[in-house]
Length: 293
Image (cartoon, rainbow, N blue to C red; front, top):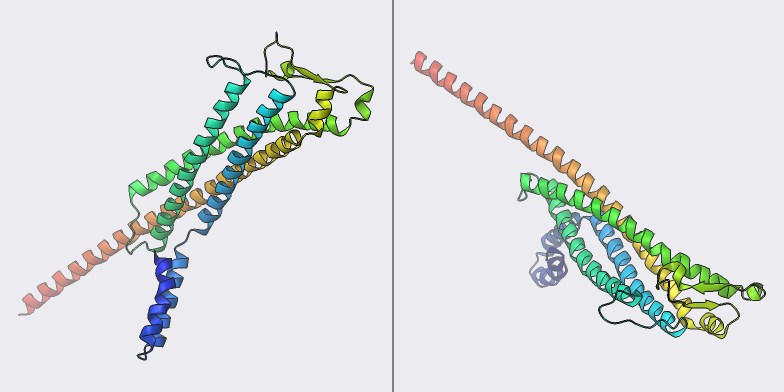
């Protein structure tokens, strides 16, 4: 709201400047904008932008890559969706899509919370003796965010490792398609049982040299799905970097707040002692005046 006021304020000042107060109003506008820019937690803002970009890339590309995987399984490996009560590969893909929806909404809210915490911490450090006050509750909230962000960083590391698995699988398939001239003499097959996508009793495989393999290599689904999984892996890595950035910001804010609290206690004790000394001197002066009288 303060930045919006800084944008509107010059137009108000222009009208007021017609009465000969333009210099004073320009100074006020400049001070208003400097105060607005000084209260922005730039480190938290950069981490939030990186987090939103990584989560959006991971969720968007991951969702579309899973949809492309369903298309490839149905069209080229002839995998049929089982009944609703059975846990097959399509059910797991649907569960992963719902997980992606939850991750997108949860980290959207978490990024807002961290930005709000950054604003309040920056204001508390800058205006230690002004409107903002550092309380025990504020320090507990900062410590809680540090612990929660560390847990989320470990979770995103696990997500990054998990996302690298389909990238490796699709890279092998894509590499076989790019080297079809070399694999003409060899009989190589892609068996879904090796990846645990179907049961052992089901035989769902595509061999090099077959029409299905050639159609799959020439289709856009394979190339698009492979690159979408790469983008999803990059998004997960960006989210990990954002979590590390948040940890550095939160740890620095915690250290600043802790030092500021110590300084605030020191100033309170110092002012109390000075007040006591002033009271002692006043009492002695009154006693000497009474004795002289």
